[in-house]
Amino acid sequence: MILRNLSWLTVSQMVRLVTGLFVGAWLTRALGPEKNGLLGTALVISSLMGFTAELGLRQVLIKELSVRSEDAGLVFGTAARIMFFWGMVCFFIASAVAWWWGGVEMLIVGSILYSSLPLNAYLAVLSRWDAAQQAQRTARLGILANVLAAIARVICILAGADLRWAALTIVLEVVVSAAAAWRWSVKNGWASDLLAWDAQVARSLLRESLPLFLAHSGTLLLLRADQLMIYQLRGAAEAGVYAAATRLSEIVYAAGPLMIMTFMPVLTRTFHTDPARYHRQCAWLFGALSLVGYASILFWWLAGGVVVRILYGEAFEQAALVLLVHGIAAVPYLHGELRSAVLVIEKKTVWSIRCALAGLLINIGLNLWLVPVHGAVGAAWATAIAYTLVWLVASLILPALRPVGHQQFAGLTSPFWLAKDLRQWRVLMQ
Image (cartoon, rainbow, N blue to C red; front, side, top):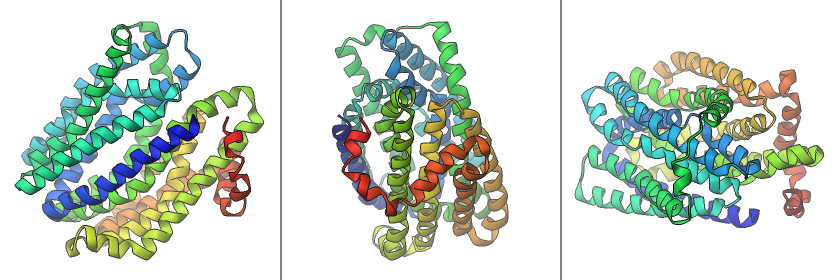
């Protein structure tokens, strides 16, 4: 089952890779640095508010539904309703932020993007699939939505459509995903669960998810602060270069959530039943993510300039150096994603909050110093330094995180030992 889930998630990621490389790059080239900067900044606000609408419930739901089969419908329905109604509130907050940050033009584009925030409640359906180790359903839905949105984006490019139509094609992916997820739920007998509500369950979920939300909001701000600050400190064109690089580097960054969706139910159960195996599983996953990070450094070092020229053109040439620095940042970032999931399982989420907020402050301080002088490249270095400090160094020096730090250190040395465990990974992950 793990192999099937991982295979489907890999195919889904490959589809996203292809559409991101070709259709996304085509759109970026057509828009140019300045318009791409405005769209990219509006998308950053959408990403931040989308996570706010989720309230950190996704990972908590996967964990809870993995072990609470008797009242799964009640937990699922309560979480979905929380996300839907809070998403409506987030729409108005996001629109206000877009107007304040970028004026009327960003408000027009942003209000289209943010209209999908209430629909993000469909993530509750995906969490229920993932908890039942049916992540292949999540992957298939992602493929369908991504392909349809990519086709719509191509039509917009060929028709010479403006930013508003580009925003509509981005929203289309969420609309298709939500419609398909809700239709599947009704067809398979989850309709009554969607109407379920229990105030005590809601309080229990929020009590566990809000610390995780705070931790991840700091992490997400740490990821997105660069784009927002570049837009303010260096203008839309420089922000457009950074957004173009980020679209490519995030293809590698997606390996972290992919691993978590696939293996978090397994880790949750093993943590309670076999601690020794649990620690071996964590070390193995940190090792696999380290290899992904090392490969990204090598690839962007050797081919970054060629890739940028082919996909984006000479106007985005500076993005090649940003990609190389983002490749360096990939190693601590991927470790940080898995570490956050591990700390959720071990009920140490408070340390994720502290580290993320510390990293955010470091990143903002470095951006204020580096961005005015070095622009997008300076922001990339600020990111790499902050990630390394809060997701690698902190794990080794803070006593509460040191057990995870030892697993991360083992992961960093994975080229020397991972191969001998490769044949045993199925047995290890059962």
